[in-house]
Length: 120
Image (cartoon, rainbow, N blue to C red; front, top):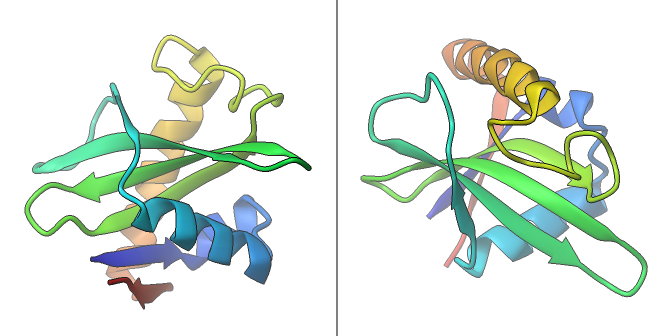
């Protein structure tokens, strides 16, 4: 499985190298919740992953390609921020940002502005 990090979204979400490692570790476990999305690419689904430690609780949102199982990073949020608190299409803030982030993802993929990590 590959985990793809669009550079523009890594910058927007302010991911450190440690955050990227955390996203890879948690995504690789394959434990997630399916969430509804809008305007998703064909053969894809939106997944939410919980990343909880003693120090903090984060939520990861990935776009998973259903044929290959590859995942594309979208969000890495505290469970207490306006998006992380309610990651659902009913949350207007999440919905608006999801649409925006999907466009950014598409552009980064088109311009080859991303990093790929292979997992076992």
